[in-house]
Figure: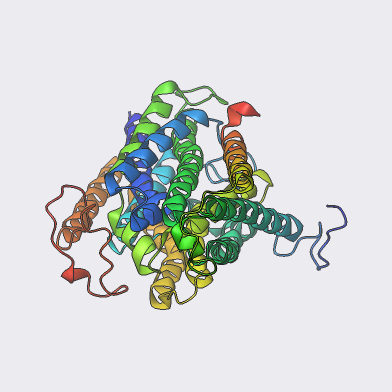
Length: 387
Length: 99
């Protein structure tokens, strides 16, 4: 009975995580398209949502391990219990909500890893984590991703402006907007195939751990469908707060820059995932926007905003680990502890949502740049439902 | 790639557990692929605008809205084709059922 409650709790939190992943990461793919006016905000999130849903159904290869080797799972390592997964997910969800509230494009994958690491350390000690894998598979790629994408986007932006005479050539602005829509859609599709699949893996492995599915099972259709719908729904509601940061606050993105940034992101993500050196999607897209700011003459990059984002990236893993660890500590005491963690998580989530309503960012005011990073409160209070 | 070994104390030609050789490859391929797509698309836009008002403001201001030469149109189509091919290849890479 206990195990069944835990499994259900994991599935619910996993879907919530998938949902936050959707609205967190829409910003990555669609922020520049919204900022340049290539797509209307609602159209942008609709396209992104559909592509994420399609992506979820396309890629359903089962993950071998929940953590991709960061936690020593299996016969020689620790058993990741459903309670630990639950606690890790709670940490990831809460950190995703905090960064969303702050408008920071941070990696949902890092939040998930952080939450799981925290839970594993509490559940099985520091020896449970393979720090070498953590460094080489998570931390170093996160440092390199923005540099690579930033440099590529800088070169591409420079070339785009140079060839089209600073985009004064007849029809070039419109042309770049169309090109940008296509590259941004590729980024969205790639995102759907990667990220929805992670949640499917977590749920499927939990079901296997609880002996509900036989070992080595593929995700059942209801898992694929619910994960796809959760990520698409989150995407459609749109992470407008983060989108405004990426599209307007890092640098004021113009169509040639948007095209160069999205093309660089798409190329870097596809190349890296197919040549065996995985780079992080969030870091790639944010880095590309910074690069596109550097590549255009007279464009200003707001380094204060970049610094805040970078700080967010550094803090993401430990912060999610802390919450995940605390959650694991309480949830592993008893069923009541587990329920308490769930209730606390729900309350904290609602609190962050309430805070966000004081200065909502919606599709109506997503393109108001205000002053870089400051003055969140002077944004027009819009009447839209989306937060 | 076997000659691409970074010499460090660690084994397998890696430092901090990272295969720097494949990282360099990823970086270069991403750079070249992006450059090819962005440059060809920008050149296409430039060629499509040959003869249009904004384009002539520099040199021959008298020849306003000249007809676009056939060569420019053909060149633009070729450049756009490069972009279309890149997108199709990208979709092929994303969808696992294709490979």
